[in-house]
Length: 80
Image 1 (cartoon, one colour):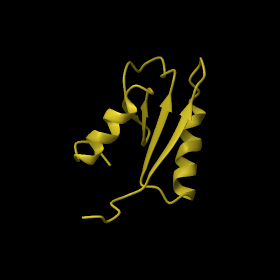
Image 2 (cartoon, one colour):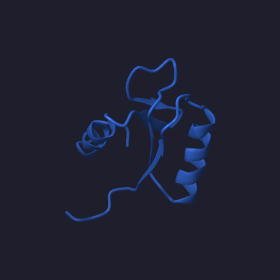
Image 3 (spheres, rainbow, N blue to C red):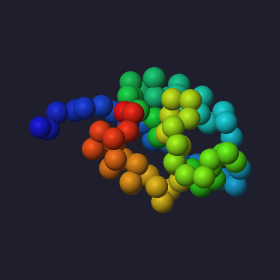
Image 4 (cartoon, helix red, strand yellow):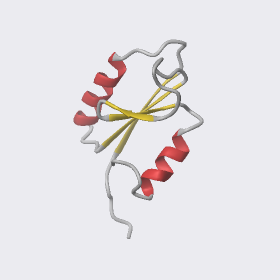
């Protein structure tokens, strides 16, 4: 219907090691940007994660998963 349903805040990281403090920073950035959903797109996932997952209030995914993740959100199958 052309109406704004929400605001997604993305952050991307291309590093060899995942850092948990990225999650906290993205949550703060999302609040300051008045976002509704946070997505951290990273080259390297946390060790306990093998694919996209919802962690501590944000979505964490790899670059090859971000388009699918966003498309699923548009179909209301995710916790947006």
